[in-house]
Length: 499
Image (tube, rainbow, N blue to C red; front, side, top):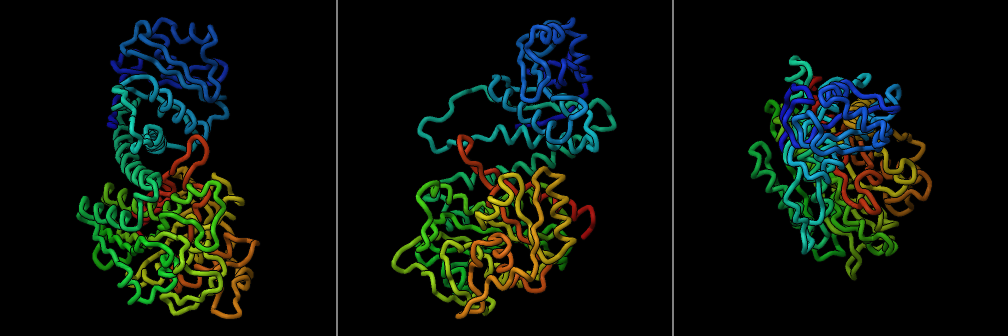
């Protein structure tokens, strides 16, 4: 889908559909009021008939509006003008995109970014418009035998810019929004694939493809033999029950000065998690194909980096495996030795994500990182604590945590900080090894992060638990692509700060 910039009056522009905002109690936005005058009061008449009151969630589509140059006009309810905020704006964008998706229009011109929004500039509003529209246009079902055969889909959108001075900011927002969405879409596509297709080897091949598409990305893939030589006993213990071989993928994006320390992103890549011998309940086990969404988000973020040509060095590391039960699988009570030399008593084979991440944390030392962020669908406890609205954030560096929280707030991909106090560490005590891989029912998200902190060494490190935000359930089941927007904004902010 293409986006472009224009600054024409809504009543005269020739387009498949003009998109306008309306506030509650039939209050027209400035652009809608201009259109109403051009069309001899068409919108006023429409609202008098009760077709649109301006409430959130309302849309009204009119074909061949009188006196206008467009084929359609779409009115989008924005709620009470005094309460119009980021949330209401984003809801209006999604509602508009859904209405356009079903309208048959091939092109549209949106005036929603013209709406006044306290504390937000044109760049923010336009970028969110681009990301929201493309997010709605994403489709699943590529593996269905009968695909959607509709020939008319929205192919282009013009974003109105009332002031010529805002044209540059609008262009920047379109570029950045499309690049971020490219990363989100890659993460969603990988997450939605079935586990018989998206295996560890498949993920590795997708990383290699990314390297071929972008010359700034160097990809290295380690097989099980190489991992064994490095002493990755924790990671390899998870792979023992599967016939699919594990892989460790590293992607080095070189956009910064040579020798500049990189940001390292580590993504959990369990392409299917049955729980192993500590097997999960059958209900909703199919959703465990999403247990590689951390890895998918790292791939997506590296793609966004390359599309944006960020002046940074970034390394993406993906430990990837399946977690299945068979006669060779790890058992509760087994003790494994990690790459760091620390021994781990495996009390629950369904706490496997931390086992593959801990070896990846040790491996990333070779890149001499400036900061390290790991991303994982790690604990059901995080879903209970935060639901589907925010990722859990824990780490050993307050400034790094603040930067990630701020990036998530700006990008609309929020996280929430949880404590990583020493008080929780004793829950991981073991009589037989240096530590256990679980710490009991209490504070499960925190003790999982405590486990990882023992392998973070002296890094400035943060952990994002995305178990609640990586995919949706129900009729909208599918990967969300989160936290690609958060991570990409975090990297964009580092370019601005110069560190």
